[in-house]
Image 1 (tube, helix red, strand yellow):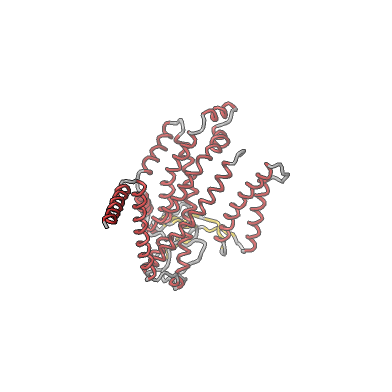
Image 2: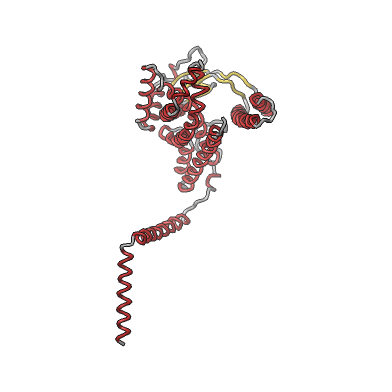
Length: 400
């Protein structure tokens, strides 16, 4: 009897010692904290899933009539009688439009201002530095609203500026002359853009085969022929009828001013475009400046010794080598510009976010719509990343 009591006492003492040891064991404490956190996350996730199943998460409501119009359409023809899917797709197209145009002009601006920052001209260098420091340190949303207010200060439609009758400038927008087609003009432009991208990839692969001592016709000429063939064939298939479209300003019998024709640059689109280009351009400027300064000074000196002009040094020696360090951070800026385009909801530009918010206000279903927005921006970001990674591998390939 006494021996059993002694054994129990010893076992209890041993257990207390083990507990004391575990209490001061760092690895055990870390494991215990992680275990508790995991249990909490499982319970929280179970709660969210149970709440989600009580909601209507389908997208069936998007097949219903939209019932609202959009001030901007591009490529697609949308009316209020179309489905909500059509409205959402129009918003996606508007987002892609402002993102692609913004990426193009922000890249050009960033390269020019990056080179200007390294200029030996004091005035040019300081103007570039002031541009970077001022716009980079002010909120993007404030810049968007500022540009909209500036564009709305243009003359009213009754006092619109016409500049020789070839353009119309008013607070309703800027109408510029353009060459267009009655039917399928926007679709043909999109096909030409995709064909141009495909021809650039074709040119890259043909140069690769040429470097591997494969006898092949001129890669540049073949890519141009490919582009021309696709352009001409689609021109006749789509029945393109090119004509000059000059904007006009007329007054009807009721005294109402009506502007029509040309390419319309509305205050909303121009404001979001200017703000995205100028804001993102500041970061691209610093990327270009830092990448060029990271190159050995001997590269520039060697180019000068060969008698190359400033333009030749930049395009043939400096920028091709700087691209290796420019492209990775440049990809991040392209992604930021695409995601920042959602701020256009503040000035009523019908991008994917504003269209989705309108649908949520009319029909509810906020959770599935937000999920759809996330998937859309994720897809756009992955596509940009894929394209830039392909370009990065091409630039960083040994021997290029």
